[in-house]
Amino acid sequence: MKILVLNCGSSSVKYQLINTETQVAMAKGLVSRIGMADSVLTHKPWDRPEIKVSAEILDHIAAIEFVVSMLLSPNHGVIKDKSEIEAVGHRVVHGGEEFKDSVLITPELMSHLRALIELAPLHNPHNIRGINACQKTLPNIPQVAVFDTAFHCNMPTHAFIYGIPYLFYKRYGIRRYGFHGTSHKFVSDRAAAMLGKPLKDLKLITCHLGNGASVAAVNCGVSIDTSMGFTPLEGLLMGTRSGDLDPAIILHIMAREELSLHEGNTMLNKHSGLAGISGVSSDMREIIDAANKGNENSKLALEVYCYRLKKYIGAYVAALGGVDAIVFTAGVGENSAPVRSLTCQGMEFFGISINEEKNKVAVSKEMDISADGAKVRTLVVPTNEELVIAIDTQRLAKGN
Ligand code: ADP
Image 1: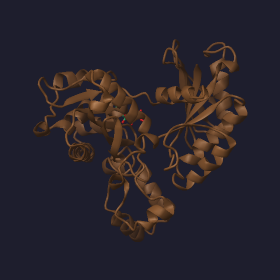
Image 2 (image 1 turned 180 degrees about the vertical axis):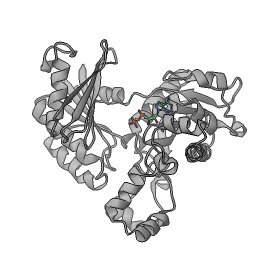
Image 3 (image 1 turned 60 degrees about the vertical axis):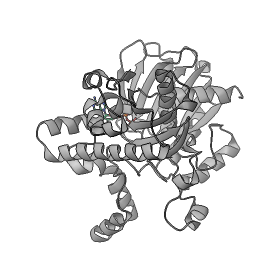
């Protein structure tokens, strides 16, 4: 099946057209700056160079129409007729407690999705906008919602309850949900294949290190704990998000700086993390460059980033009662030898030890970078969240 996979943000739409038979992305791209006069579409057919087109794209409907026209374009397209797109898979960030698996989108389901906006006001409204836009641009084909939270839905209660009055869990659904589920699931499956063992016999710690970052403890294929919580703000230090901090700090800064709720939110989500500590960038490549040139705050940001991750790995070894493999994935995890090296240093005690030569050449490819004889394997696994979404979409579109 040819499936259009969409990830709709507030002013962007990321897309891939995936052929599920070959598991190859026929084309991929990004519409950015939606709603502004200088929107940009970047489009890459699998067999031709990337192109960039500027246009005025006022909303998500116009963005998806533009994407479809690009997929059909005689010069840059990969299909001849719109009807070749057989289904659409949407990444939906929050599925709450209700959605433990992907679902076929129906009018009734939309009201359930709208009810979840309260849990993820920064993400779900844009996902819903994308679904509505597709219903107009690509009517009469199945659309499926694939949730970032679903893979974590079997976490034990003691891992998802916070230390605040229990009534807030009952009243507002305040609990750990976890995110990046499609990625943690994909790399867990690949890790089992690389190790030549069934997933049900493995204890894995999967580190998804992209702009957002999270780590998961995966026992026998089930996520039993993860670092992101009620929202994607908790846990590791990220590009622009703070990750874990003493909750009283938020109240203190908001009071001292007289910040509104919106400003407090923006400070924690957009001006913190690597960007906040370094004052240089949210991009790990630029942080490492600056650190190498002697920028002290960039060096500090890198150290805090890796130290946090190391602490989570230690905690999850304890939660799992041991570990067979540590898996690094996403932009930083797949590409950054210094981050993997700094994170794994000093964990020989656990049996975690990497081969620096292998680590250096492990760039965007599946590789076992463990030192010879290390008890715990350390793996680099490129993630493919879009493929997970496409495969789930196919399953539901076919009525399974
Ligand atoms: P997203 O969360 O947006 O999907 P990605 O998984 O693509 O993000 O990760 C993006 C991040 O990956 C960038 O911000 C950058 O910091 C990091 N990255 C990409 N390549 C490298 C590299 N060679 N070295 C270090 N970091 C990298």
